[in-house]
Each structure stands twice: as C-alpha cells, then as structure tokens.
Length: 488
Ligand SMILES: Nc1ncnc2c1ncn2[C@@H]1O[C@H](COP(=O)(O)OP(=O)(O)OP(=O)(O)O)[C@@H](O)[C@H]1O
Image 1: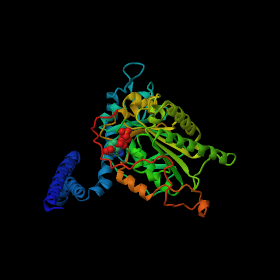
Image 2: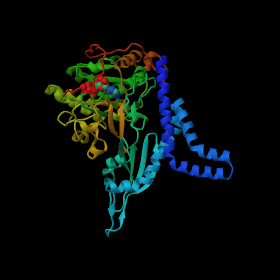
Image 3: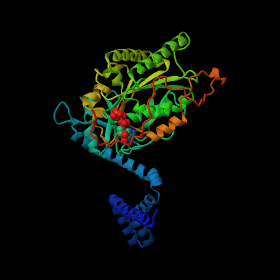
Image 4: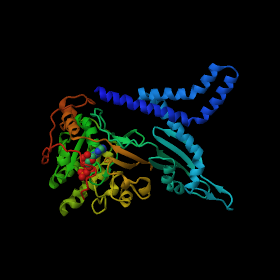
C-alpha cells in the first residue's frame, strides 16, 4: 500500500473515531449528567481524584470504544458493536410499541368508544441482523390485521424489510431485517462436500446459509430474464458435482436455448440435450430409470437411498417453457406427458427435477402444480408472485418488487408457510469451468463392475458424456449490466 493511501486511511479512521466519541458521549447524555452531579459532589467532599474519574468515565469509555473500533473493526463489531446495536433495537421496540401500533391503525375500540385496546407485545428478540416481535392480536382483531400492517411497522422501526408468520392462534411473529445483508453479491467456494439431499445455494436475509432441499422435492425457479436463474442453476449443479463425480448423483441437463448455459459446465452432467428431439430422448431415458427403479424397489423398500452405482438422479431444465410451451406441438405434447410422469412418479425414487422458467403462466407451464417447491426471483407482477408462491403471498413475498440491481435475490416459501428472503451466490463462468474440470461426471457404472467394496466411492476420471448432441463451448460471459432493459 502506498504511503499516501495509508495516510488517507489513517486520517479517515481518525475522523470516524472522533465523530464516534462525540456521538456516543452525546447519546449517553443522561449518564453524563448524573456523572457530572456525582463528580461535583465528590469535589465538594474534597475527593478530587474520585470526582475526576466520575466526570471522565463516560467520555473515556467512548474513547476506548472508538479506538477499538478503529483498530480492529471486526472484533469490535462481533463483541460489542452488534450486541449493543441489538440491545438498542429491543429497547426501542419496547418503548415505542404502543405508539407505533396506534399510529399503524392497530388500535381497537371496545364496546364503548372510550376504552381501547392494542395488540400485546409478548416478546422482543434479536438474532444477527433480525429483530423479532411476537405479538398477540387484541380481541376483535385477526392475524391478518397484524400482518397487513407489517410494512408500516417495519417503516416505523426503520427496518430494511419485514416478514411475518403465524405461530399460534392470534399470535404472529414479525421479523424485521434491520440491516440489509443481501445487497452485496457473494461468490461460492469450490465445493468439496458430497451432497445428495440439499445444497447451499446462497444466503438468507439474516446472513445464514440458504440450503435448498432437493431430496424428495421437485423445484420450479421462476424469474424474468436477468433475474439470476443461472446462479441457482449452477448452485444446484455445481454443489452436486462432487457427488456426481463420486457416482452418488447423476446430473441430467436440458437446455433448449442452444445449450449456451449448460455448455459451460457440461462435463458435470452425464446426459445433456440441447435440441428438442434429444430432450425427448433424455426424458424417455429418465422415465426408464424410474420404471426400472420401481421394479427394483417393489416389495423391498419404500425409501430410496443413493449409493455409488445407484445414484440419485437430478434433472435440470433451463427455460422449461421452450419444452412445454414454445416447441412444436408434438414435442410439447410428448415432452409435457413425459415430464408429468417423471414429476408424479420420480420423487420417492430418488429422481428430482429442478426447472427454470421466465413465464410461469399455465399456458407455458401446464404442470406447475406438480412442482413441490417454488422459488420466485424477480418476477413481472404481483399476480405472477401469487401465481408462483400462492395466493396471499403477494404482500408477504413481493418478488415483483425485487430490485433489478439484485440478480439472484428471491423469495422462498418454506414447508411451514414461512417466507424467506434469499440471494443466490454468483457463479462465474471460470468457477463453473473449474468445478467441471475437477469433478467430471462419473462413468455410469455399478461399483461391483469395478471391484470396489460396497460403500466405497467411485472416482472415475473419464466421463462418458453426451448421449445427445453436444453443446459447443462458449466464450466467458461478461456480467450483464443489471440496468439493461429486459429482454422479453
Ligand atoms: N447471484 C448473483 N449475484 C450477483 N449478480 C448476479 C447473480 N446472478 C446473476 N447475476 C448477474 O446478472 C446477470 C444475469 O444473470 P443470469 O444470466 O443468471 O439471469 P437469468 O435469469 O438466467 O436470465 P436469462 O433467463 O435471460 O438467461 C449475470 O450475467 C450476472 O452479471
């Protein structure tokens, strides 16, 4: 670092630290006044040293905090800054709840107009960047009355965003995100774990890992062009690549947009289709896997556990609508029929589908309801949000209001109905290529064929790829300008 830059950095930190000393001392003005009074009493009592200490204690503690913050911001934030901030949020809510509730229209008149009641604040808690209010509706109110005012409550407490969930009859929890952690894009590390059930695709609004459950689910990801579907696509494929390499998972890919997306990491996939006929062939093969597995499991087991040589099958379809809506009529009919069979029969047999689509309307995705979990990235309208996540989620999970500058951000409705705000990690072409080079798909083989002991993982370097026409390699993509006007 050059001397000038170092000098500038030191100067900036000094300025911030001085400002913090003034700010923190001013905020503690009541304590400062009390200390002044005590200090003067001690002076009058001829205890000068004690008097000086009493008067200086608050400014001195501000100086210590500010120096700590300037010298080691990370340890300061973890050990003192964040806990103090969270205490401040809790204190503010307890102090202001009644006033805020009244102003947000939650005051409820009793039988005679003079007596009024408010929803009761049962508990205030904090965790990470989230402030949680547990509130009981007043008699005469419903949970919907409370959740309907969540935006107003979030604004009153200066929260970045808010989510709500019903936890008991008449009781809701309001989660207020006080600092936005999703603004900054993040990139994943080279995966190394053998995942078969769930993968870490990104992070949640509170900064914790966003784990996407795959086992036993079919996932539909909806988002406009540029919403960041590619991040979720590679979040799933890339994180499963070590398992695909080990023979625990077999990745199948359909990319009818010319194979542009899929070709970057094609080596992770065992089977790839980039044209309509090849896609039908691939779906047929996958359906055959289901039929064979049904026969093998009948009378033996109802639950499938992947093992080398008997892998879980994950089919990723980029732009599902090309297959189910825009292709020729024959392809649409056959593709839809095959996909419906895979969706209805595959789940319990370890065959999962993860599909991506821009336009979620029934005309383009006729089998929408067969997907058991949906992720809404940035969509076009409130009606699309409701279409994707379900009625009632237009306000709770406003995917149509996600900013264009936040590709990869979206909403997920958990099984228990709780809405989660998430953002996928960004997978660069370089990372996708390195993952594909490091973890090419295992050759389709049973471990017995290769003399491996049961349970031993196969690491077969040579992938037997591309049963169907291969996609050509593409040049690295330059990140698209999020401000670009959207393609239809
Ligand atoms: N998780 C992310 N974090 C930050 N930036 C991202 C993220 N995901 C995508 N982007 C940026 O947004 C651009 C568009 O993303 P992407 O191609 O994944 O969108 P898409 O939804 O697949 O669009 P299309 O349907 O047109 O293919 C990327 O080129 C990249 O610059």
